[in-house]
Structure formats: structure tokens, C-alpha cells
Image (cartoon, rainbow, N blue to C red; front, top):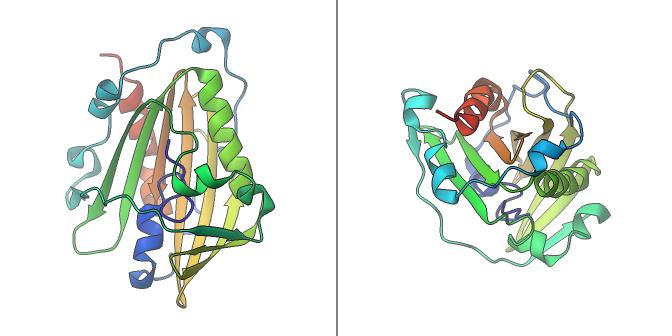
Length: 229
């Protein structure tokens, strides 16, 4: 998983880039989900990771999301200098986290979608590794991001205020779950984004987007990523 603070924190690239065109999301607090559900089992830890090609085939596609959703072209990598203010835990993840190097599992696939005629969208990331490595990696990031209720990101001359909220568990499935609500504010405009991560055995599925979209599609994303047929 590429965890990027300015040009994405676990897949939040579009959020920061689109902020000037976004309005406040009124779905905050709907369908709270996530929280870890237990330690990796011995069986899960011994399962061989899936290849990136296999993961790619298990990503959501427009037919899964419904009419109006289109794949979003991948943006060129950006390497702006990043400063995190007001959150020591997030700052201490180091430069790798800020530039996209942390939690970069070798087996991965990602897709971004936009909704026709709007700035709304959803992003899915799927990773495969040992259950122990997946659990420790995502746990470290979510603990850092939700450990501070508010902080500030400065990147490329742009200042973004961030408010984070850890969400409680719901019946999503999988072996472990994490979820948070992030409110980004820049230039007087705010955007609320939900991010839910589910580990099922040697697979980690992450959805990022508007709260309503994430809640609606998370079960389908998990089912498709873990399908064996």
C-alpha cells in the first residue's frame, strides 16, 4: 500500500487535489464501521500471497458500481515536500510515509473511479501478503492517522486542515477491520472522506471515498477480492 500524506494517505490523492471544487459532505457519521476484530490466525499467516495480476482481476469495475462510474486515469507521481503540523505520531512515520514509500506491499492493485459530471469518486486498493505483515502495516498507519483529532498538512505551498475520527465496528466481515472519517479543509471548502480497510486472511481491501459510496460498496469489494471461483 502506498501511504502518501500530501498526494495520498492510503489512497487520498484525489481528495487533496479536488478540494477547491468540493463542498461539505453532509453524510458524516452515517453507518459507522470498522475496528480490529482479532489477531491473525496461524492458518492465515501460512497462506501464500496472491500475485498482483490476480489482485487486479479482483478489483471492482464499472459494472460493479453502476451507471455513471468511469475509471479514472492514473495521475503522474508527485513528490512535493510535505510537512505535517500538530500530529507527532504521523510526523514520526518518517519521510517514506510522506512520499509514498511506507507499507508498499509487493503484491498490490489499485483503481480509482469518478462519477460522471461530478467531483465524487471512490478508490479501491487490494494487497496480499502474510496476515501478520498486513495487520501490522495497516494498524501502524491507522493508529497514527486517528491518534490526532486534528492536524495540518502543508504540501507544495498548499495548506490543508485535517480532522480525523476513528469509527466503531459494524458487520463488514473479514478477520480485522479499520475505519476512519477524514475532513479536509482548504481555501474555505471542506470535503468529508471515509476510509475502510478490511483484512481477510492474506488479503487487505481498502475503500476510500464519500461515506455513502464506501458503505454501499465495501461488502461487494470484499466479496469480489476474496472470491475463489
